[in-house]
Image (cartoon, rainbow, N blue to C red; front, side, top):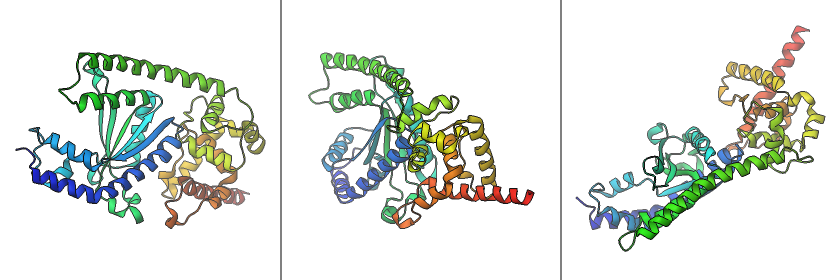
Length: 361
């Protein structure tokens, strides 16, 4: 049975009343994605968000009314079945970063009723050589620790995060307007042919961007002087840690380094010593710190020896107290940065080492 006019009318009226809540959710999810995924991992990407307009929602329900599989009998069923009132898009420069972004989304959010995040990877080219839609759709809910203060009324409300490369996004959007929402009987042969040609261009564009960024990273390794940005920081330090992926947790490491005035490789070596850029020394410090965390129930703050944490630990070893003091701990101003907790724990760890050394003496 198709959706009744009354259900459509009442659902549209409810969404009109509640739209500001979905806008708040989309903005919050977008902020988390931008800071904790893109910036923290030095991923080149654009993060945008939106909510459906009331008019767009009404049009969607009217299209659903013509489909046998969308037989919503009540307003509650409509809201349970439509998952993209709030939407966030993460468009990566490189398609190779899409999986990393998706993995981070699964860590930072949860699914319905505290389950795992629902992930739907779509790649139509895999089954049809004339289709080029490619994106990963994640249906997410904020974690309980994020549902505080201004965000308490977002409990049980989901947001759709779409992950794709920038080039794929171009094709997806154009095809969506011409093919998915067809007017006048749908796209003709000429339009289909041009969409296919554009699809091939976007796939070759993905490959060109990947090669371009690799060439850029190679050139940046030759830079001297102050770090330009987090990408320059990663590129210049990568030769010192060839077995680590310095993009992972790069934002935290870059902030920790530059906040202490260590704005270049020369400054790092001068302040921390050559051992600060030694993979063996970093691995030893991280291993000792992580073992300490198991004794104080702090395993969630473990450092990753295969990431930019190899640089974070070098800075912590000398400046943990200063880093801890420089970050606000007032919960009313928002959840403190992760480095706040790590620095506090590392400071205690360092003090325990000193106590052990004094006892041994």
